[in-house]
Image (cartoon, rainbow, N blue to C red; front, side, top):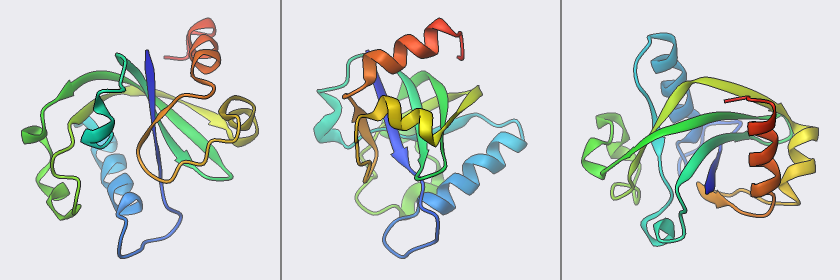
Length: 139
């Protein structure tokens, strides 16, 4: 089982659209639309083992986790994602409306120093974090 994580930038910048994309994600949530996000780069897909959870990393603040409901092929990407250069071949993760927020200090106890610089597979504390999520029925 895998967990996928993706950092959300604090500010807008020209090379990464995560802040803008997350605002679109929140808008979809507020309008009861299907929630979705890019999966990992194609080169990492072979390392995915039935991904179950997805976390948005807000560095030094929090991590917001959703359950991965389904994975769709790239042709299901949102039209607004077309400007995300270099990501057009990524699969689409359908995410649950239900979510929980993990405080940054608690995240640090699970992440074991992981430095998330892009959408990636979370490995270091994966089993420990999955057990925590399932023990407390957080998702």
